[in-house]
Length: 326
Image 1: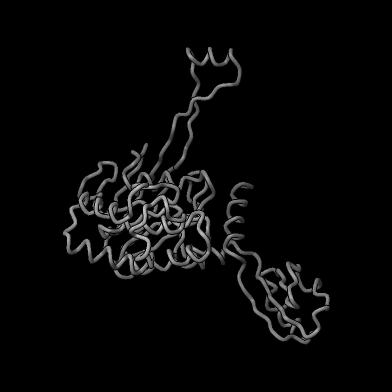
Image 2 (image 1 turned 90 degrees about the vertical axis):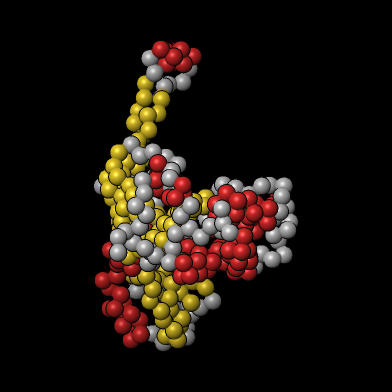
């Protein structure tokens, strides 16, 4: 089966004017303006297969949103080739646009002073969705996201999390095959994040939709994505399984130990990260994990011991820091 998203040597460069401060520099720039080239995306290549949910990770300014805008047709690439569902996105073909959606956590597409139901009906008209199909899909989404008591309220009266759920429903009413999700849980509390993650996973399962997700919340990525693409300064640093990212870049394991004598000093076994109600968390070099675990069990009276990989947040930070040093 052919890839849904195919990107080859894709770049987006901007010419940005720059000058020093002061009146003289301002006047000079009127006649002799200087520019510098910003390589927001710089020769990236990857493919995404049908039904994949892929995490697209990177710090602010890495090129994630620029890439999503090129994939959704909002930006024309400087160079390279990009195909989604066989279409060139920047041509903005109607047949293409009705098969994709772009959800941005910091953007609002709903009419502020009207109930969300009215905005949903507008989406039906825009995409030409048959009325029966529209009502069936709308009610299914309202049920999945528990919105029945909220859809008749003006959007301005909804909380951030409630509004975000409405935004997602509006973006998916036409049953797109490809979802570009840019920080869909931005600013939401833990409960609301979890509900949106469950909804996205269920939509992917029911419709075999392809999802490219950016998020600074690693819980989103761990819950939804088996594969991640890490981008930094417009270039791809890693593309593969999340588990491989952990194995490749994590130099440490985390050991959580509960002892019968909670006052025992454990610094000789590893770096003590925390102590809480008799439970001690240690950071141990990955190569020494088996040796340290055996020594703990041999030397001390251990009630409980667990071994875990380092948090994904820490591993991603390590990827970025290694790139900066390089």
